[in-house]
Image (cartoon, rainbow, N blue to C red; front, side, top):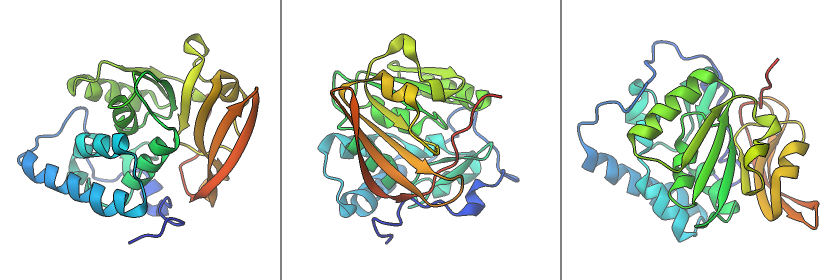
Length: 243
């Protein structure tokens, strides 16, 4: 079992382009949903609850969202493993524990409007959408944005709004947001995101150098200023910008 201090690290091999793995444009055929549910429940019990995640809303969301529908078809047998997986374009679907931890740190609740930077496969957005009212999510890789939009639509998530584009500037038309989650690492906390965070809101993001050791931060906005807590070391793909 990984310790809390190393759980977020991504093996560098997983950050390389996919070779010989077919990417899903929608849910892959699934022969045994009952078996996947058993794997999912075991994932929550052994990887998430055992590491201290206790928010019942987060645990239920992680039990419900079918992670195997968000990974490339060739990686479906590994969907519930204790590690991230590549999804193409040098991007990954995060380790289940990290998804749960970041969701719990946001204090996600019904009635909230959340901004996600880095849609990826759409898995984190789906977990949030099981709890909050609306998820606005931005993905800079347009192909991933389209695949996530198709996949989430097929799965019936009507409360997720996806946009292809540069997430650094946020989504000011829909601000302020009760919470913001960033799933790629920047060298600093983007000022536009802090400005779009509602008073009393929370933002969770990794900060650090690309492919090096980074820190997962919890940012609380209080009286217009930010209070920053360093949660644990992680390793995420870098936050990229439009040219």
